[in-house]
Every structure is written in structure tokens, then in C-alpha cells.
Image 1 (cartoon, rainbow, N blue to C red):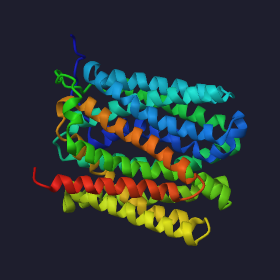
Image 2: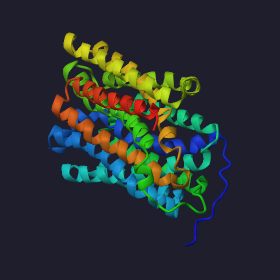
Image 3: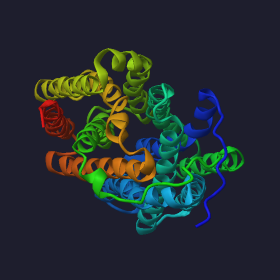
Image 4: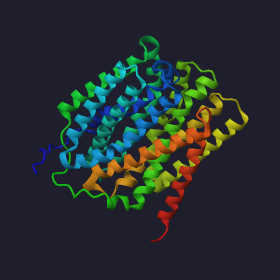
Length: 394
């Protein structure tokens, strides 16, 4: 087999971030910029709110499931072709979304958009693992990615509301498509191949048998799922029940991301002080504290900024503490099959978040804080139990 020619990845950390971050941002932006129009989409497409919720849940599920395919492919053919092909599909499906008025086609294009996003995401994180494994820059890269991604939920809904108010909902997907084309053109010129010249045989069993992989992936799923369930319920709570306008909702939503942005620069010092396991444990404890405050607000207060958004600030801090360490904890032992390990990491996370998060929303009601409380309570306690088991002698 002829392998692609490997060029040395000589970019500085800021230059590398400018190259890699757009792909992670676009993956998240496809979710967050869409939130302000969720309440109006059933009427726009002639369908039910449940179908619109399905477009959120399926995006998350396919985002993860697709990576189990693209991770091994990236280990075989390289990161660059997977990244470029996935981004091209993501851009094309975004333009198709902007042009459809039929609910079945809208769901289908969202699935294709998620497939493209999954390819771009796994190629990006496999590249990070290729280039920065074992180097001090690794924690900086992960913290910076988390910090930059915090801007997406901060600014995405505001941008979505402004674009939809002025140009209509279709313009949202046109913007995503155009940004994807710009990122694709930049990567085509500057993204060198980083896959090792000879990778290990693609084998899932060693990864699936790794207990630390499962514990830290569950921690990542807990953190990301808390945010997924939050933005699945936030429009119905703040717009429908609390009476927020689209812009007001977007600003309130952005304050949660702002809490993540403010916390992210301290992540490296937290990890140095508490270690990987200690940081994850404190992240889970912080999530549980936020869940308790949400439950109090649901029981004793009316839906408002104080009862729903302020407790999410606490949860946002827990999300940063967790996501700063979960990738290193889960992927540490799998340098020679980084693409496959990254794929499984994101696949498991996306499936857990998309499936379990949707179940909690459907069972406990998407117009209350109980789905967030329930999801965090179950998954954070399970993660803490796994961390406690890791500390026990074999």
C-alpha cells in the first residue's frame, strides 16, 4: 500500500489553532445557530415539534456513529482526505438545507450534514493526537479548543436570531455553507498529512477493553450531555414559558457559554494542581451542584433567568473542568491508532448524549429543567463511581 507523503507539522500553536479550530466551531455551530428558530420550524416545514427535536438528536447521534467509520479510515488513508471530504459534504448539505421546504428532506440533509461533520471532527482530533501527543502543548491545545468552542454557544444563537430576523431561517444554513467552503479552501492549501507512516493494525478490542477509556469517555459524555440537554430544553423554557424574545433568549444562552470562556483559561492550572482524575472528579461534583440548584428552581421558583440560567453557570464550570482532561485520560494509551481511538471516544459520547439525552427530554418533559437534572444526576454519579474503581488496586 502506498501511504500519503507526510509533511512536518511545523505550525506554532496559534497558527495550528487558526487552522484547526474552524472545523470544530462549524460542527458545533450547526447546532447552536439553529436554536433560536427551533420554535418556528414546525410551522415553517409543516411538521411537529417532535420532528424538529429529532433533527437535533439525530445530528448528535450520527455525529458520533459516523466517526466509528471515519476514524479507522483516517488511520488507513490519512487525516487530510477525510477532513477535506467531510467538510465538502458538510458544506453541500448546508446549502441543501437552505433550499428545502419539506420536513423529510430537511431531516435527510441534516443527517448528511452530521456525516460530514463527523469526518471533519475525527480528522481534526486525530491530527491533534498525531502532532501533540506527549508534548506539553497538548493540554494547551485541548484547553484552547474548549475555550474557542465556548464562543460558539455564546455567539451562535445571537447570530442565528439576527440572521433569521433580517433574512429568514434559510439564511442561517447559507451562512454555515459559506463558512464551510472558506474553511475547506484554507485547509486544502495548508493542512499537511500527519498520520504516522505505519500505523498499528486497526483493532477495536484493546480500546473497548480499556476501563480508563470508558470512565473518561463517560465523563466527557456527562459534560457534553449536560449542555446538549440544556440547549434542547432552553428554547421551550425561556421563550415559551418565561416569555423571552429570540434575542433575549440568545443573550441569556450566551451567558452560560461566557461562564465557560471565563473558566477555560484556568483549566491548565487546575489540572496541574489536581491531576487528570482529580479535575474530572471536581468537574462531576460541580455538575451535581448545578443540578441541585436547577431542581430547587424548578420546585420553588417560576421559570426565569435566575431559576434556570444562573444554575447553568455552575454547570458550565463543571463542563470546563471535565472536558479539559477527558481526552487525555481516554486516549493516552492509543497513540498508534489515534484515529480509531478518537473515533470511538466521540462515537460513544455522541451516542450516549444523543440517545440518553433525548430519552430524558421525552420522559421528563422538554419544557422543564428536570431532563438536565436527571441526566446529570445519573451520568455524573456513574462517572464518579468509575473514578473510584480506577483508584482501587487491581
